[in-house]
Image 1: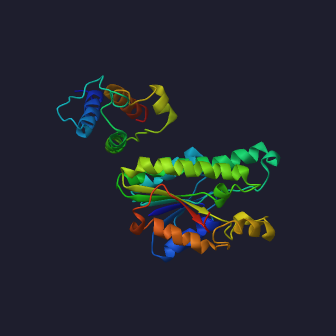
Image 2: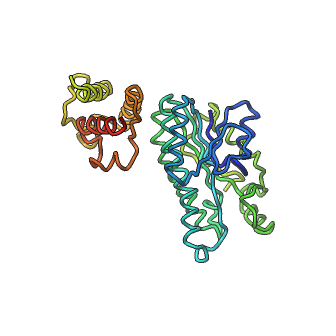
Image 3: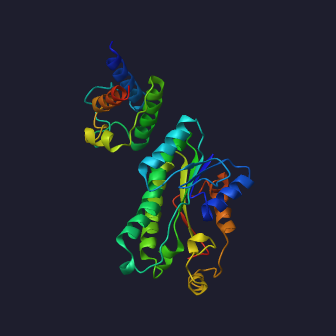
Length: 225
Length: 95
């Protein structure tokens, strides 16, 4: 079973759909799972207790967890000086602490089997140092640092930990960003084109597969950076 | 042997199974982590998972991640006795 956060929409949902299409069992987590048509549970990843409740349920139900995809995330495209404190806090809590909490609490379910794959999400904004994304990039830079260290901690248990850092993918996360802004970011990628959610799902599929067992602690930039 | 003593003995037995040096005897003051610690980080996690299973057998949930468990004795992993004490404490408080 692969646990996917942010499963109700955007990249998380696209990843779930792809895995289900490939006959891989998925357990989706999102704050609102009312319209999620597969096994799921409501969870606010920024709440340690909420994530813990999920881990406890999976353990109690005897679910064999073989993967975790931390796709839940929020963005706010603003200059740091014009970002309200509450928004900055929310971005760090969801993107960074949410990823850490899920890794802390769900990885023990994989350690027992000495097998697993954890995929975290960063952004190309970290590598490119994009203007107007400083707090978002800071939260994701934290995820990258966490991924590298956590990968070493998990290596003894045969659990690989990697990070996907997409450029601007066509999802609801880009709501409010103009085509001009998107084009400007895309033009800085090594492959200057805007990728679809399917490109990210391709990477997830590879990273949870044994074909990528030689990879851990890596940050893979979609579009190249 | 009282139930508490028996559970403590079970915790010590789980520690003993993970010791690389099988000639060592688990004692109350045996340090589990730190410079003199007998368990590396991987063994420590294995111990936690084993104790989780043991707790489930007994009928409670052993929480090795909570602030309460960690701060109560600074770290419950300081010694074999401090770990056994925390395990027993959680068992009794969750009865």
